Length: 357
Image (tube, one colour):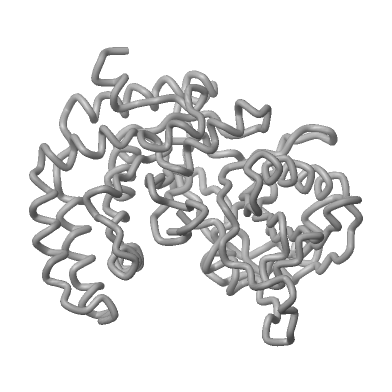
C-alpha cells in the first residue's frame, strides 16, 4: 500500500477509541469492540484526511462557508433546507482526486478478496468525528447506504456520505449548538454487509423510562430500514439486566421486510411473507446473547448505550451476534418519570434514533 493510501484508508483491525480523529466515532468504536473480542463486520474507513483532501482539491470549504453565512435564522426550516440542498449538490458534483479514488477502489477489491466475494455487498456508513459523543448526538442526521456493490458505486456512495454532513438536520443542529462546520470532518466506513436473518437495536437501559434494570430489544426480519422508514412495527422485548430474565415479549404484525435484491444490488422493502409476519424473530438464546453483548459494551464505556445488532443467516446457537454500531444512549427520560406520557412508540423511537447514519 502506498503512502497516500495509508493516509486515506485504515482497516477496522487497526482502529480503537483513540482513532476518532481519523475514523470518526462510529467506525473507531467498531475497532475498539473488535479488540474486546466482540464480533463486528470486516471493513475499512475512508479517513478524515481523505475528506479534507477532497474538500481542498475542490476549494469547497470557502464555498460552503459562504453559503452557511446566508442562513439568517437557524429556526427557519425552509431557509436551512434550501442552503442544505445547495451545499449537498455542490459536494456531489465535485470530483474525487484520482489517487484517493484509486485508494478506495483498491481497498474495496482487497475487502472483497478477504470476504471471498468478487462483488461484495457493503454498508457505506457516515462516521463524523463529533457524531454520537456522550454529550451530543447526531443520530439519524447523516446517511448510510446498504447493499452497495461495485467499485464505482462505492465511490459515489462515499461522496454522498460526505454530502450528508450538510443535511438540513445536521446543519441546523450545529448552528443551534454553536458547533463548527470546519472542525466537523466526515470519515466513511466501508463494511461488509452482513446477510441478516434479523436485525435491530438494543438499549442497555429502558430508552423511555430510563430504568437501569431493564434492557430493551427492537427488531425485524432482514435489515432495519423498514423500521427507520416507519413502515413496520418491530418486535419489542424487555429483559432484566441482572438475571437476563425475559420480562416482556411483544410480537408485532410485521408486514414489511427490508431484503437484499441481488438483481438491483441494494436493500429494498418488500411485503413480508405471511408465515413470517407474526412469528417471533428471536429465540431466547439469541435474546440472551444480544443482552450479554450489550451489557459488556456498557461496562466497557461506563455509560448507557444503544447498539445496532445483526443475526446473520448462517449463525448457529452459541455463535456471537454481529454488532454494526454502538453509541451513548442520550435520549432517555428521568428514571423516576414513568408516567403515561412516556408511552412506548417503537416506530417513532426507532425512526428518530435507531439504525440511521
